[in-house]
Image (tube, rainbow, N blue to C red; front, top):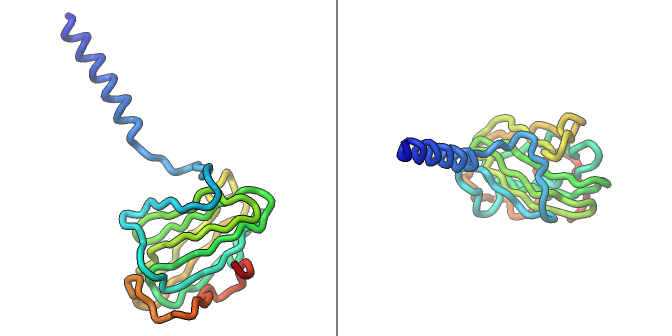
Length: 167
């Protein structure tokens, strides 16, 4: 009887421990610091970016909403919060998702995403219900990938659109 009770307690403790190991990113408000980078891709993007996109976040919009990237590879996003509320940026790439921590008003964060395959990828603000209020868009990537190396040394914005000014 004592051994059976011990087994039940041990199994319950194991279940609690395993439940704490899971991850559910839905509804994540990305609370935290002032502009660091959190990566949830299987392999963290590294090396020089093939493209750079300047993005401005306001209530409740991404500018540009639908950037076009000329060449597949690592893309660096320079994100400025030009709004009055805290925002963040999440990019759903072919290798998984990457996102910034919370970006306070007036602050800037840098995010690298591996967009090494041509296609369309979702990006949005994961804070509260900002995505549902319009802070979302589609990144279009064309061309063959460079695996993170680049011939674009100018630091130009390949987004095909505006962006949040200078950083």
